[in-house]
Image 1 (cartoon, rainbow, N blue to C red):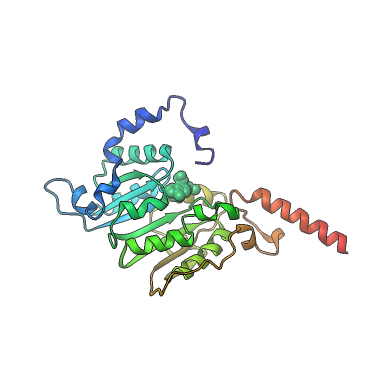
Image 2 (image 1 turned 60 degrees about the horizontal axis):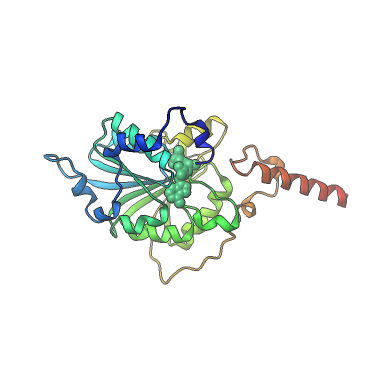
Length: 272
Ligand SMILES: C[S@@+](CC[C@H](N)C(=O)[O-])C[C@H]1O[C@@H](n2cnc3c(N)ncnc32)[C@H](O)[C@@H]1O
């Protein structure tokens, strides 16, 4: 995950850690589709009240804090990066959390891992923006993904999306609308509005660097037919006109913003 390997401890051996924290890692998630809550309930305990999913869970700070706060809910984290899976599993085991586990996998695998209506909530915290047009389908908030999440959410269940990335947020709003979601909350200062919900690693880190938390909470509304993509897919198209007024440039867009500023400045000088 974007330079994460560079920060690994010297004695980090992935395979050894996967084995050590295996109790918190589900390697065959498809076999549990439709029965996660029952299958994961510890023997002698009441079945979990509901199942919630954290897509792109990273190193699991949000997942484990959520699990600690609500022991009667099963929290599942999914991430495509094995190192993140290992760190999340370590935090689950060390936190003695019997109501959390992680799945190695990608966002487009979810329809194989869960049954229709099985999820009582989905969280997408600070997903990788993939700013280029050709990578747009990898975004966890792309139309195709949002349509798949719809099918997995229970009636009225909410999806919560947070990001520091204004262009990604603007793009995501178009995608949620196309996918027929009804917003319950849209805001540019989620932390002021929800001060007590758990924070993810990226939220902690990026807010310390001056980021605002943009967030959308929505549930699936009516949808007729299959929506067609009409939004622009390059995140450059969602940057504001006044690039000098940008006080915070999200990660991955610094180079693009500098180049665009220079290009626009040269253009303005040429015309003056
Ligand atoms: C910027 S990090 C954010 C991690 C965490 N949610 C947080 O807020 O601290 C994005 C995470 O999403 C994962 N990711 C990106 N695309 C993914 C995909 N298509 N499927 C699963 N995980 C993905 C990355 O491996 C990474 O761990």
